[in-house]
Image (cartoon, rainbow, N blue to C red; front, side):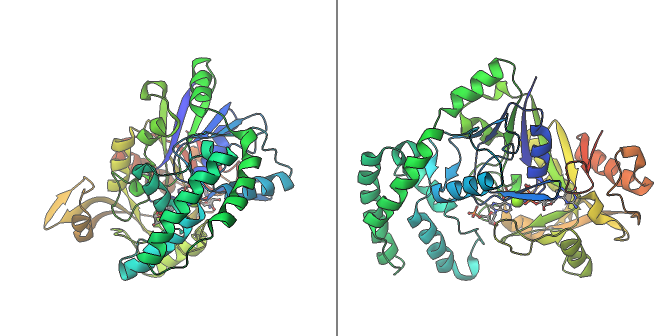
Length: 423
Ligand code: GDP
Ligand code: IMO
Ligand code: MG
């Protein structure tokens, strides 16, 4: 029995949802520990497509306990809509729990996210406008409302009234925006609180006890390493900690309780939102990857920027997450694309480096140094073992493995449960 962390190694959307769904079949507990409904995790079961934003991707297994840890920011309206959507499709949510310490995304967070982005003008971050940044700001400022407040009707009314008044001063005074009606917010959100109350439980205790009793626990990462508030491409990042270290804080368990850290990446690179992206493609190959790979945001529908696989990024992810294994998804998307490039290093101001630069200004000056490998034309979406893959596809994977210094244990050749090769 083991506890495993699954993290995104790039800028999100690496296929974490699919990978977690696969690993969840043998997990007793699946825990989300960071981010909120800025995430969009796609799980495909047969002909059914599930797009999960806040509920852990283990929910499709009725026996698996699904936890939303204290590090997650919860929009209660979205949570309930997602639960209702799943229940309508025959998926039970009786196995869901929410930590009382998780912070609540309030309607003024959504409004402030939009106002702040508009005020940034051409320097906007390209956020998902889900109120994530403003909610984490309040958490750090120590004026946030938590799930334990939301489910206590009287306490919630008092805190929300004061919070809306304070936020209205900012909304109108700083941004010239429309104020919010505190009583309307209280009456709407109190109803959400009543419905959520029965799902509230101390997820730190549940997780700790599950690990101690030898159960299989899976920590579901959201976003990706380069979107991490501390080690990511700041300021073009999210406001949480998607790296493996964030898991411990995000549910309240210590690092010695974690056995494995699996990094999920794509066979190429994508990014939604703004910020430097050294291997970005602006030509027809980039367009081809976008269309073939269906690279349009799960949450916002925005076209994802596309580029070649970047081994500098993956090496960075191996280091900052302490990866014990890597899953590479979407190898099938590269079939028939011609020669394939892998960025093995960056050239900056005439010198080569294999390390991801900490300063965005430096990253913007980095030129990728490529290794070019021959591609393959075969449709690989039906391959079930590594040996079945065309020689050039195998070579591509082993070359990446060499460059990143970590074992690639899974290779995705399609979005379905059956389309994963285990090594
Ligand atoms: P997440 O945010 O990391 O969970 O990833 P998303 O769900 O946002 O985006 C990944 C997309 O790729 C989804 O549409 C998946 O169904 C799809 N996908 C995952 N793995 C594979 C794969 O190996 N091949 C193909 N073609 N699609 C995949
Ligand atoms: P999953 O879990 C891809 C990006 C946004 C924006 C930046 C900040 O599906 O991989 P935010 O709304 O978080 O303040 O936006 O972070 N972003 C993601 N990009 N996948 C995600 O999640 C993302 N979550 C946030 O596009 O650039
Ligand atoms: Mg996604």
